[in-house]
Image (cartoon, rainbow, N blue to C red; front, side, top):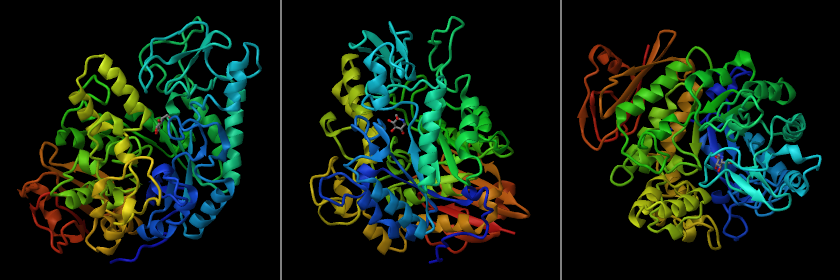
Length: 556
Ligand code: NOJ
């Protein structure tokens, strides 16, 4: 096994994040230290050596701030304190120190499109029409647009205190902040500086491209569908944030940007514009949805579509900007169940998905449990889900006439809860996640699929990830090389080449349950190079691939 370097010589100080790999923790489901069934900060602290062994450079932690937990912490009532369910600020300090001792940086989730309705800012704002914080949120006498909330229903909620309506793109307990108000922006910047001064190394910015809303000439909100995406002042706000908070600090920043296009992503991530390092695209997450429908209208993925899309992002951000690379996060079902084969070929397909992602140009993100091949939950009824988006939608779908079978099927393929079942640490009761009753059922396959088993097995998905991380730390061509898609029309094979300074890396992956013989045409010579990594322990490259096999070959 190659050693996992803690830091790499390749990393220039300013864009060290280009050769970094990020690991996402969803605190609620990661590790529970006190038996209340909910993960917590001491639980995370107890797993730092595991993260160091994996070799990741950065941890992005989903919100653990004070919160009524309407949306599992994405509804924040105090940005500068931790929720007692998760721990205290002292635990945060210990976490930051523990990560830094191991050479790992910490990215906090920055959720500032909205607050909780229990945040003191909103409590003040709703108290009277002339409260000084009234204008910190979006108040109207009547619903002004017909937008539908991401969590179903209208985005406008009536509030009795002042007989008016406030805007919430997400749940009614997540009122949108009014970024037009400079006091709001300054309050956010001050909070960000406070965290940076405490030692955090960057931010993942929740739905950041929704903060600038578009107006009509009469000052009302432009109610066109999705007109709140990449609004007119977006780049001004991002540049202001950069100036006021981020500049000169050598951080890692990533914007979550639903609906973003490649052209807009170039703008967000062009270093010359001083906004963010990278953004998350959602386009590849929408390819298994029926066009024109929201995520619940499921269809099977067609591999050439996926290749075309990911390749467009690879080449689109080649000259300007930078990609973030992900299959999994806390909002998506498990990739091995969604795009791989989580039955017979679980190990091979989890490895191959990782190979294809990690060898691309961009910064890879691993979501907890992905590194050892966790799968979707086997939930069969709506009652087993907890996620607000899933439950609100199921209720609405039933009213719209979807059958119970259709609803449970859609949830079984797309619910966010598949990512949120507790991390399966070992084969003991409750998968070693908690000594209590877990808040969301543990997947019964923990007996076979767990971190301890994967760490102990040198051929596991875990060690495959470890080696992929190591390759990124070792080969400049993987970090900075150009990207070229091979065999674009092939319905079972994902193949591409990376090249830099006379070196070429071939990535060849079988995305099917069948044995395949690949004809690389004029690129066949790339198979003559040195195998850097293989899912099947192969030492020489060949055009015949086993089901879900992938290889990485270095030339030059
Ligand atoms: C995106 C987050 O990733 C998701 O979990 C959350 O529900 C929404 N933004 C609202 O904050």
